[in-house]
View 1 (cartoon, rainbow, N blue to C red):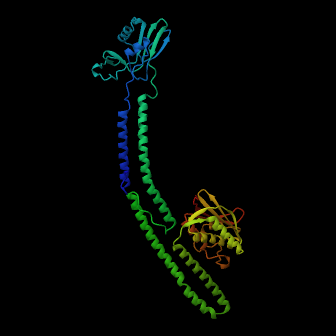
View 2: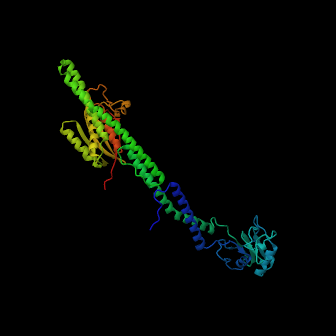
View 3: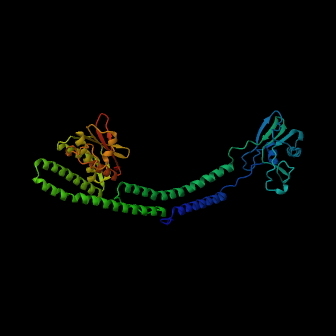
Length: 449
């Protein structure tokens, strides 16, 4: 049975538990290191070690890193700066070597910082610590004895850049970090997963007001935020539905007075009747387009895997069969997640606009990164840059004359962009080099296994 944090625990308590668990793990590792690893030993040389090295022994006792090195010189060594000598120590060293004191040299760096555990032997007039009457050299020591081959010199080598105990400490910290890494990774993953899901759900909600509500899961702060966001979505959806239903009802109710007006002008002169009838037909078209826009905004979507290549190729073939100037260029086999009917309406609106204003269109589908890019390019004169974004506003047309023969009433691009945004995509207009306008729709791709 694995231990798990209580569901919905606030981020504050999760972070506190992580810190406490990290401290506990660090202390456990520290205790294990003290029990298992060998404790660091003082790095020193006794006077007996110096005598043994001078007499021909190795001079290596214990596990010291600074074992005495041996060499021969023609002249006797001299004291380096910061080193001193003690005649009593030199005499004792000569006695151990069984040679006269004038044939022995002993220089060392004074050290009064350590007594090697024997505080009773610490005295201010001593140059180095003493133990059982024997000098202990923690710092550099140089000793020499005159032999038939010259002076035999032993010297403490320089201290290493990183001592053995320092290496053990570095290993200690590295093991502690490695031991805490899985715990930190698990905590970060556990904390980031609901945040990432919350962000994705909020993004879907921003694209589509009818998207499913955000899952109320994870830490307490996230659950409270998700609950507030779901309440906001419900209020916004109710507000939009109310306003949309009102617009749809008004547009629907306008059909009755228009029908009465059309009936009553039958007795009017032909010149007046034709003009009024044209206005009535235009108002009917506007009402029909408005009702279609309202229905499209409030209807639920059926999400499927959509083969965009097949969809666009089929639309281009059907348009060509009807004698419309629509061709298909580069079409890659790309898939997206969405409503096939809504996507068909999106591209049909773009095709209709291109044929009405540009004289003909060419379709293409290519992949750019993780997006499927659909281009509907026409052969028209293009538009000024200040109009490219305004055309996506409701009832905004490229032709300000409102002539039905030159296009619709200005809802086609509005509907198309709304559908693209509901599918997590974008829709923009660009003037083509050499003339013409291109509608570029970008939709997230679905990887095919």
